[in-house]
Image (tube, rainbow, N blue to C red; front, side, top):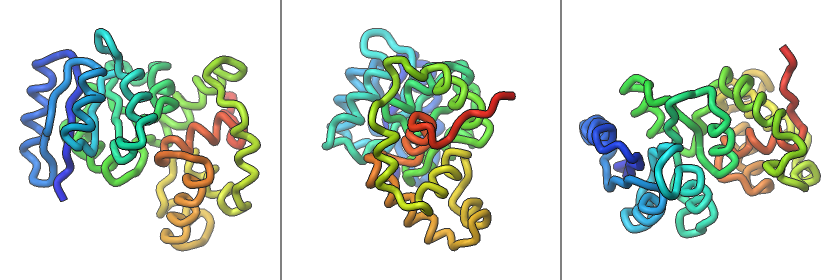
Length: 226
């Protein structure tokens, strides 16, 4: 199946470079280009995009607002957003995950990293390395405690999870893959996948990235003080 990619960036030159790269792959194609967030939301639906490469900072409707719109639209539930940021240590990254993005990627990433990110997002996985998860995400979610970004009631929502689902959620929040979690908990990767899917359904998470955010926001996982 060909992955349908939408490019959303106000820099035409950058979009052109991304388009050449994406279209060079046999399993993906660029189906549209947007110069602002509002256009990206519209094209995500009309062009049936699977993955949107979304710049965070754009004039008018920015990437954060556009991601929130996509996440809130049931008709676009299949669309995965990968945020592109100039600075990877950026509080907007966490805001984008809270808004519903599947992950983030620095604009300075290597071509193979960008292509890999598209494939990972299309498969429903999260673009969150252990370093990024334990560092950047933990840092900004901790700073945001008690502020408007918190989502009340999520701690109580964890009551719906089984003990094993909580264990798996902790591991997901650590940035570990299904295979790594399976080895740590001494179960099969398929069992881990089942627990992850059930946790996502119970918590209303779109993907693994949202599980990470919920794990920190609910207090199930606390950032370590270095």
